[in-house]
Length: 339
Image 1: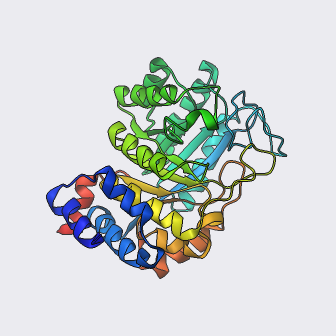
Image 2: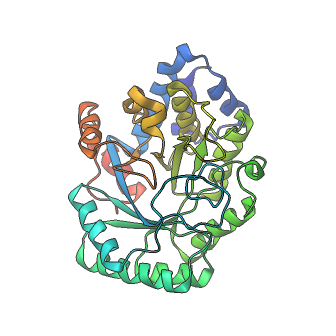
């Protein structure tokens, strides 16, 4: 496969990858990784230039979850030593946003464990968001609260929530191997609810959970069909005490191929190199930025990230730039890149 020619078709002819094309990406020879990386970068650069979007998480409610997700240290079935606490105070959420701004973060992600939030929990988040929007300029707010109702989603939208994350996590076929306490359709329905009220949908995946190449391809195309604006690509960090603790299927080059798959299938979308990147990509994290245009900075929910300064150094050393205005539309970015 001539990867650069395929990328040019995507960019200049609006070509949509076939599943056969996608399969070739995942089956490509490791020796061709630089050619694949170069082609994926041409797509990334066409739409996002040298910009890197920074995101930061606050684990606003930890553990205490009745779900049985096999990858998660917060699951009811997990035998893990983690902090377990109810929803933190409004002030704690607001202080986290102030810290995010100091660290050049563009999107601040308020994350809660559990199947779905109570109305009281949603009200606390809403109050915090309203204060953040009033006091801190140019900071995008993303919430990740589980299965929400349309009424809750509308309240979040009215309060100023810009984006809502609800991952599909895996393929429809593989879903029951990962969790049984909710369905794949529950997740898709939640994303559709968010879109219906006008909140930007963020939905992604966790790779390395025993899925096949066909599953990965289905995941990439499912997110294309959902029209997710932001696609976090997580790589399983197997945590002792979880159902998937013994899985270790990923290599750094495999992770790069997966990122390339999602970039080629969803060329205009924010592709975020997310949880597990430090553990799985290791010394090739920087190469991932030639495909992805977004990363998390700092710690994740119950696993540690790397020091923010190291991320800043990687971005600078590779000639990339931290995105200063997270509210630029893709069209505005495109005009700036090509003007």
